[in-house]
Amino acid sequence: MLLIPAFKIGLWNAWIFMLPHVLTFPFFTRLAKEKGAPSPSETGLSKTML
Image (tube, rainbow, N blue to C red; front, side, top):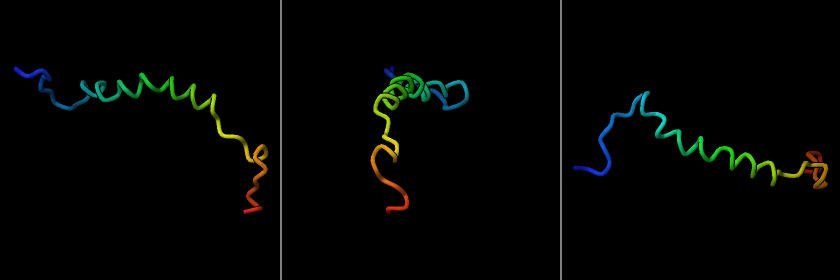
């Protein structure tokens, strides 16, 4: 007997692959809002200066 059961990848089992994404999405969204990149006006860089 295997510890991991055999299953076919299909529509009904797609949740297995989406579960890590769904569980970590709120964490990374909050992290991105807290550590957001500064706007170009805050950094003093401009597209015309490049």
